[in-house]
Picture 1: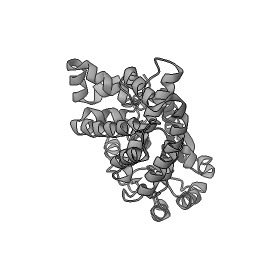
Picture 2: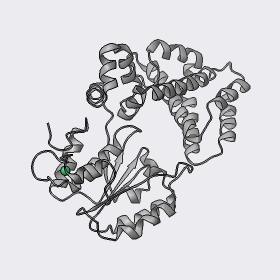
Picture 3: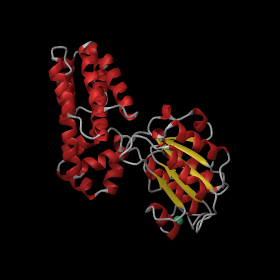
Length: 342
Ligand SMILES: [Zn+2]
């Protein structure tokens, strides 16, 4: 096993490449870590930060995870670490948030040899914010590392992409998820031995995401997830050609709460549509939403195979508009009308 990032699972070659670059002092000053929600982007970013400041560099594991510098980085309490997050009340990361970072970026680090900035949801930066960041990336301060995290790269300006090294996160395989979960969570170990069927269902529903699997393991997470699934299923049930506009509209309105929740619901529906499409092409496809092929087949019969692609495009488009701050009510009314017109 590689000595680089030994506490992380999967992504072997990426970990090795990053570890070697840090060891030799040649890590680029800007990284762009891309991957799905729950794929471990933030954990990797924090581990890179720890490796950069680790006091036990040279031999053994990197980061060691036990020196004071590592511990502070991993617990996000290091004074030379800044994590920029989107204001939860807003749909985007604005230019003022990026500009606020700049003055301190040009000051020396306080305790470590370098400073690390992690920008979460970098794909939610407005174009103005991205341009403000670009100015920094064009001439980054010598002892500063900037790590951008993103789920959809197409929203990141190519000028930014060309100045950051891209690090793709892989989806975890079932085996990797299993290893990671049982190593990380007592609930997972207990569930694995006492109710293997439910445990196996969680591995499926997690769709390669450790964050998602951990959520599903907690009772609150499981309840929220059940609600999310039921909401998504009620919409899927209303997607058939026979449904009236009123049925469709009310099913869609029933899933709309906060913008973020609605966005998750729509992701579930997109996954369900993707499952049905995969199933139409061949049996035995790995399912992202449905818990069995039987369930997926029933949904497919109700929705109708020929409508799938159009529906898929409509929901993707709605998801995109939602992230750009479109008004929720009118967005859903328009969606219901468009579905009715297929
Ligand atoms: Zn250390």
